[in-house]
Each structure stands twice: as C-alpha cells, then as structure tokens.
Length: 362
Image 1 (cartoon, rainbow, N blue to C red):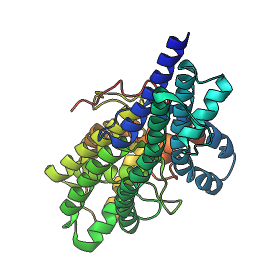
Image 2: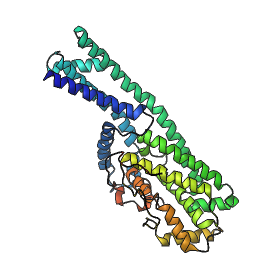
Image 3: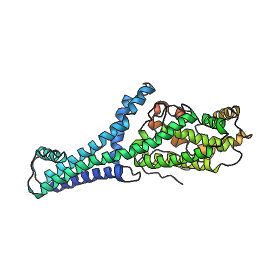
C-alpha cells in the first residue's frame, strides 16, 4: 500500500509540475489538463453571475475579472496539488497518520517549519517541497509581465482601429474613412500592420491562453471584433473595390484566418477545416449589396459585376467565418457588425472537443 501511495503522490506532483511548465515556460501552445480544468471550472461560476438576462455592461464588468481571478487561482491550485502529493509521500515513508502527514506537507510547502522531520528521507522531502512551493509562485510572477506586454501590444492596435473604423468597428466605415483621407493610398501599410497583429496574437494567445479572455479597457472594444473588422475590410476591398488583385491585402487575409483557426485549434473549437468557396456564410447577399451601395455612395469605385464580387467576398469570408463567430461567442465580445452581432443569443458556447486534436492546414 505504501508503495502505491508513494507512486500516486509522485505522479500527482509530476503532473502538476508539467502543467506549470506547459502553461508558463514552454514557448508554444500545448494544452494542459489542469490549466484547462481550472479555467473551465471558474468559467462556470462566472457564467452564472454574468447571466444573459443581465445587461451587457454588467456582464462585461463581471467577465473582465474572469481571467485575472483564474490566474490567481491557478498557482493556488498547483500549490494545493503539490501539497496533497507530498502528504502522500510523507505518509508512505512512515511519517505518521494522514493528518500528521498533511500537516508536515503544509508546513514544508509554505516554509513555515512548525512541524519537525527526522531522517534524511523526510528532510529531502521537506526541502524539495519548499523549493517547489516557492518556485510555483515565482513562475507566476515572471509569467505575468510577459503576458501583460502582449496584452498591451494587442490593445494598442485595437485602440487605433477605434479611430479608423468607428465604434463599434465596421469594415465599411474603415474603407470609407481611408478613402476620404487619401483614396486608399495608405492601405498597404495598414494591411502590413494587421498582418503582424495576426502573427503576434497567434503566438501570444496560444502560449498565454488567458489573453484570449482578457477584455479591452473600454467595453465597446474587443480584439475579436477588431480582427473581424479588418478581415472583412480586406475581403471587401479585394472583391469589390479593386479591379486587380491586391497581394498585401490577400496576405493579411491569409494571416488572419490562419491565426483565428490556430487559436480555435488550441481551445478545441470546431470549424470547417477545408471549406469550399460556395459554402454558406453568416453574411447574406443582401447585406453585402447594402455594404457595396454604402461604399459607392461614399465615393468609392465599386465593381460593376456585383455578382462576381459577392462570390469573391464569400470565398474569402468562408475561411474565417466560423472561427470568428465562435471566438466572439466564447469571449462574449461586444456587438459589432458582421461578427458578434450574429453570434448565438447570450453568446452560448460552441461545441468543444478535446484540445489540440485538430491542426490547421496551411
């Protein structure tokens, strides 16, 4: 029995340390069961508090605390599991009863030292547990600055879009404002900036998944709606406002939908992996024609063949349509045209499968 308990304690400690390494140290998006369990358990509580029957302002204030609170609970959960694992080890080496083993584990873990140990085996356990306890807390302290740096970079781009695309952001408004300024002369620079944005969030939002649920400082702003606005703006531009292909806009579109797909991959969110250009999308043809008329009324040169323009737009949109809407769902993004405004009522969650099973095709 002692051998079984000792091995079980070692396994629990190893699993906890591996979770911490995957979450904090490993520079790639590798899902961890313990981290996932903590976030999903906390989310259930927040979903009850932020019920769809409440106002969006209330729900936004509540959900703004979701990631910060979970990040505080996560190291506490790790420390608790390490304490349980070491309690099993102390009991297995004959320290005393389960209660006494739990006391010495807590004393060692928190470096309180109010329970004395004897022999080299118990001393080795006590020293190693104290080291792990301090190390887990130190990991979180070093983890937060890097994550908040990525958050600040993301929110800078979101705030800049507020100036260029209105509130809530709109792809049509984005194109109209750029046209008024210099007739689209600066658009190539915008596409490059947002190509970098998508590359950055692909890396940061899978390495630090808590960032996905961090909300913008202003309730009406959100990274998902900003991403959707820029993807729709580029898709409208290359399909409706251009007589010739725009390579930079197309590169940005590809960077964008691959980024959203890979974030969905990490969270196990289902989406069509290889959609056909003729597959249905959330945008209707009438909405597209209305947007085209708004562009024409604003002085933008619009394609004379709107049937072909619609097919071209739908062919681009189908690549990011489902990932965009489902990310808007799980993040409870504020209402914005052509993205979160057509999420399920109450921002219900999409079907979730096991994390990391699907991989985006490039």
